[in-house]
Length: 213
Image 1 (cartoon, rainbow, N blue to C red):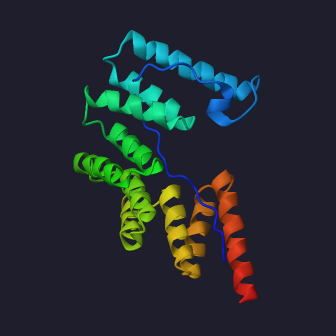
Image 2 (cartoon, rainbow, N blue to C red):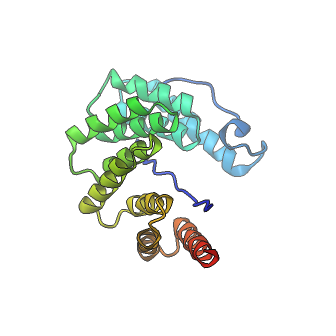
């Protein structure tokens, strides 16, 4: 059985809950003293203090929530995002991120609700369609997922995330020609990116799989 590498499609647009600063291990599992982890902690703490000083600034809150999200501190991110609802529940970037976070946390119905709200506000937002596709895919609603990815690509033909995820959907359905085509498009769009290497690896796995069968 193929084990196709997957890519997260979370988009960080940018929100408050005042929490204690996390340790390096809590952020990314690295040992204390790791420069990157320490810098991330410092960035989160700085954003937390700015948000605490002006708790009515939704952009500061969204920024803090996104930093938590990027650090995979999902509970802190969720609490921060929810705090923004009281201030502005019509921010498309916020709703997109909140929906994606709910998807990551396994609350697929709430995720879909937030992403649908985002689409009502901005029906031509390719990233919202991509993230909604990922939500459908996580719920095994494969046809709906493919429809969402294709809609995203109608709006933004250069969306790496939509091409990549559409390829995963095709590969899982063993529609390998289409999967390869989509991954090749990612390589064309971003030949030097880390995602391009994942695509190359996936294409190689498919060719090996075909060779064995």
